[in-house]
Image (tube, rainbow, N blue to C red; front, side, top):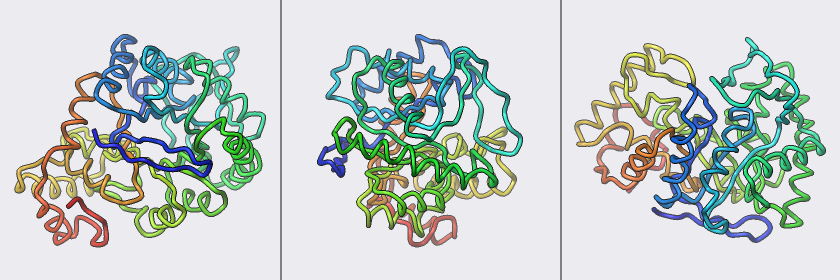
Amino acid sequence: MDIRRHTTRNGAVLPFSVVGLGTAPIGDLYEKLDEKTAISTVESAFKAGVTIYDTSPHYGNGLAESRLGAGLRHAKRDEYLISTKVARVMNPFAKPAGERADVYSPGFAGGFPHAASFDYSRDGTMRSIEHSLLRMGLDRLDIVLIHDCDIWTHGPNDVEQRFKEAMDGAYRALDDLRSQKVISAIGTGLNESPMAVRFARAGDFDVAMLAGRYSLLVQDALDEFLPLAVEKKMGIMLAGVFNSGILATGAIPGARYDYAPASPEIMDKVRKIEAICAAHGTNIRRAALQFSLAHPAIVSVVLGGVAPQEIQSNVTDVSAKIPVGLWADLKAAGLLNALAPTPS
């Protein structure tokens, strides 16, 4: 698998496989998963050449980190990168809270029975990192991201206070750890392009993860955030490039877009994209994956997986040949931003 190397502010050179493994699904995102299968999925990713593994305490209240650590237990530590996040601290002595109706961040079908509390302070950041190391059985982290400091998660009334807490607390703590070379890279993990821009301008970040805002369906990040990332030499990990599934499955009944059933308008647009893909002898899943990698700011597309065979499908799709005429036809049909970089 191709590797894209990114140099961080403290001089570390991080080797990103173009396809990474996102671990939200093995944290029981949509359904409770078999433990052995989840761990085997991680092991299969390592065997396939995946070097970047993204996780978070949020994913199953620590379950994803635990399963990721188990799957990498026998791998050589210098042969993979761990990216995890701070913002939530787990309490094993309290039960998880119910979901709020005024935010869109998804809950999980299963996971550990621990209560999460938001904590963007310096102390909360340090506790979160310590807990992550313990859950994964590691002695160091490569990348740490400030997680979900956006309207998607906190709602419009609370996001300003959370942003201030994150920059005054988490950012300063992570910057210190980076300067000490305790961690190699720091960044943000967000669902919104405007907030990603705001953080990129407010701090000195090495990387960022952006979910669902740059894909074959949505190119919100193209106008401001991705050019800013190039300017500031930030490596971008893209998540959600299938927009919760519809760009992987196509416009089938029950297809999901951004964690919810796809609207008729989205279904219609996807059908049109599928038709052009079929005319070029390919499928929408491969087109979505390869399109996302074409922008120069992107270092990896991080894909979830819940079974070993999904890993092999990802590896196959990222290297499959796609006629270059596909991209011109999508742009001519008004289905793709005319300024979006495309594979050559």
